[in-house]
Image (cartoon, rainbow, N blue to C red; front, side, top):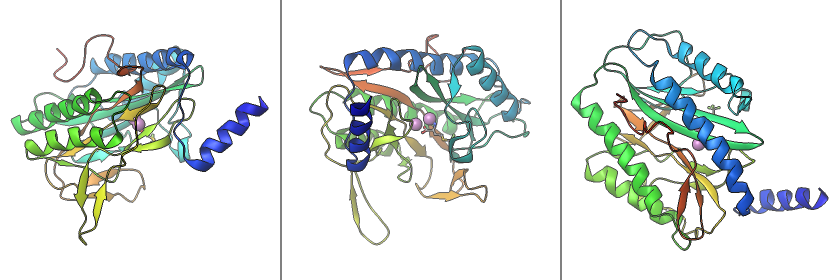
Amino acid sequence: MTEHVLENETLIRTGAIRRHPPEAFDGMRKAGELAAACLDMISQHVSPGVTTEALDNRIREFVFDHHALSATIGYRGYRHASCISLNHVICHGIPSPKALKNGDILNIDVTVIVDGWHGDTSRMFFAGEPKVKARRLVETTYDAMMAGISVIRPGATLYDIGKAIQELAEAQGFSVVRDFCGHGLGEVFHDAPNVVHYAEYKDRLGGLHKAADTELLPGMFFTVEPMINEGKPDVKLLKDNWTAVSRDKSLSAQFEHSVGVTEDGVEIFTTSPGGLHQPPYL
Ligand code: MF3
Ligand code: CO
Ligand code: CO
């Protein structure tokens, strides 16, 4: 017990990336599967006329019915079991009494805690029939997430993940959001490392920002959760201090998986049990 506490404190102080033992993969599989099953469940309820508050209520009930906890309820004062981000909302959209309209695209992000382990995942959903450009943004964002995940193996780096995502998104004429990133997770919700979704970019003042060349090693757990904008990457935070929107009001999309580095590659903990990987979920 004492040793465990000391080890935790050392990791927190140094920002070192935790390497979990093989048994921990079981915990992450259970948490990840429940979070993914929750998104499978909600896919049947997304349609024009439904409020995002009603969707959040279903998510909270699903989580509690499965004897799990919501990691977001009570997190830094957040009060909901999901974040629901519509159209030009990049992330951290707050469920509200506003009804979905035909053509809306939305991200639903759920984090559950099962036996102390966190399962964090999000997908895009369609309300009715979105425009061709919106569909292309969503498809590209899914492909970008999977491209980032596909390079993960011991010896690859965080930089490699960002490069795969940025190249794919920019080849389609879209941009990668820089102000939010993936994160280590496990028994902690948001842990080291930061997983940025770009390789490199220059800021307004010409300063070069590069993803870390941190080496990936077996037992590291983290999320890959790229946010891709139709227009510019710049973010604006609304007055509620949660909702992040694209500054130019262009559409934004996101997918998120929780993953673990294995001895020879990667394991995705949050794969949809029902095969509902990307919309339309027919
Ligand atoms: N699930 C989000 C993530 O991917 C975090 C949401 S925190 C909240 O890291 F408080 F906004 F819910
Ligand atoms: Co996350
Ligand atoms: Co999330």
